[in-house]
Length: 267
Length: 364
Image (tube, rainbow over all chains, first blue to last red):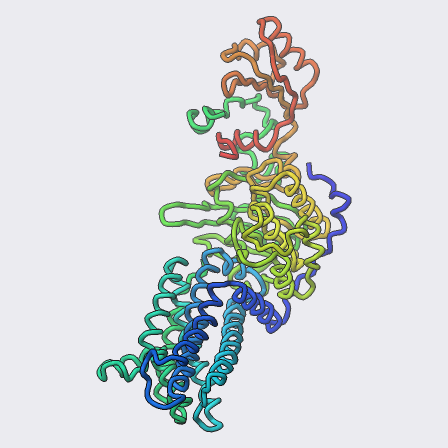
């Protein structure tokens, strides 16, 4: 009963299996994730438009009292808004995207391609760091245009990079923990809620000094508080490496990534 | 056909057998389950030889499934299934919804671990050797898997970059009739178009083995034929294909080897010709309640007859229908003043085989 192959089908290329180099696969997947993110209006709102609007609006008008001096507002806001950018990309945006990828079977499907799970995590990391770089460039540009003058010596850039990377690791672990264990809708709701709450209590637009003295140590133990506190110390006050803040972020990263690795369900 | 599905007890429509007891006859429920001795049915490895140890068997085997068991809670999805799919061949796993086809395929793809039994894919373990297998195996899931916002062209472009010697995405899209949709987000494509993107994704890396889980469900006839052409082309190129389907015509057209699965068990396997046998059928419609015994008495020895559902009559013989049988049927009808409508002479189909083996319609 099997038919002779149809004439036009005979020229099908013979099998030639083989995986591409890991780096090429990771860059291909990261490119796709980045393009998807840029095309998604809500994600763009979250990662770029809100931080830029907050920075501009709160710099131009004295909506929140942050101290005296001509540049006090913008000098306070730029480090906080960089922390917000990391929160939005590494946590909220990544959790929502991954949650829906899981729901649509995208992660399952990728699981049978040569891109291993390690490769997929690698691609997500490349995407997140790439988007953060773009965010920082834009926010620094807007900040400078608004009169921002960063403090800190030549070491400041290195400490900022260390803070941003450890913050990214902390938020990514939590994002994957959320996306890998909850339904996509619940992830969407929770990721947005956490974004709003941490925006409020993370020292991003309201300085932590506005909170009761007893609450402050607790707030700087949260990843958002630790990240913004560290960035403020380096960029606003010209401090050296904020060891405590980096340590807090690394502990969050270790706990979040370990739990995500244990509990993440791929389908 | 409703009454046949719901009202008749399981096995009820098997009434058309026996066609005499010669054992050469068309499929009975034993057929295919017997290890050997039934002409035309490929002997299945017994438990002792599964997994196969003979190098010649291993070399010619794409997938070997041995006594596979998979349970979900109290439900047993796969219940002691054994099956061998040859290299360079198209193997169809045919069965109704819920037969355990997808579970079996997903164990072969490494997505699930068996509760008992063993699966070998290209001589390797689907979970332990996943890294070695993934570049060599193409997978089409039953549904989903493609990001909704992505465009078919860019999606295939990314997947192509996962492989060392991929097909050209532009060429592949053209072969599947998707060129016009290459830049449309996947979520705006029709179900059939999405199916074809998914199929393209399974073959873009030029795998030597392809798993297709219901590749044509929901396709219009044109898209279905594009898919059939692709599968035929893959086979001609030397790839092995394992597909699940509940379309018996698909299995008949495409497969070198068909495994009929029901309730997680193998009920028969063989080539389509072996499974359907040489039996011929005469079907006609007439008023319900004809005297079947009387009709049978007027037919050549070895014939069988039944009415199912009411008003639909089926006469079956071992060999091809000959003019004398048709004459006998119509003569009996003329004698009894019965106008036989829609009189058709047919061969048995896999659908008939399935119905006889399980007592149920394939597409229920």
